[in-house]
Image (tube, rainbow over all chains, first blue to last red; front, side):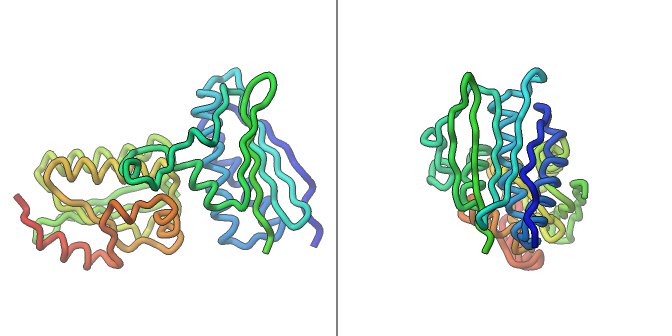
Length: 139
Length: 120
């Protein structure tokens, strides 16, 4: 089976853009050989990072965009999501499984994505913004 | 599939709140909040949430469920989740939701537990 070519897509900073992007990511994962169950959870991980990029990164700023990159190579799928926000450190993300956080209404998205994907890296972009790069192995 | 809710008050006074569709960030999630607020306003504080037809949910939906449960508990009632699909159960485990909420295998099981709770 031939793997899909890398693709990049630019998204507006609107929540309404997420459904279509998630659908595209699931379709890409299917093309790369992931089964339906994997597509479901890969889509969920991407959704969580996209929501963070739009809400916390770009703060719904219509003048800012989110960049989505997809690549399948070396038996793994790579998803990169970049925003133009102030950036965040992984170390600052609270553990939603800590007893004091279990009943909070928010703060679970990043950890959900980390649970689903095999690797999850956060980097600061120049001159501004954050890049989240996550991978899932094809097994 | 859009997110919808449907309420059914049983003879015991326990309410079965059936959720259907996908639960993701957006205005639709407010429906759950409105349902819970209206039930509590009517002193219906024992609520079994039937999750069998929820096919997908994100962290915003988890937050909405945690918020709904907290509102019911603050009002002196109890909310239990029931009939969760395997995939949604996996998401619950990732987020520790099953540690803070009662989750039952079937709606009947949740209803039986709630019927045994003092309704006052």
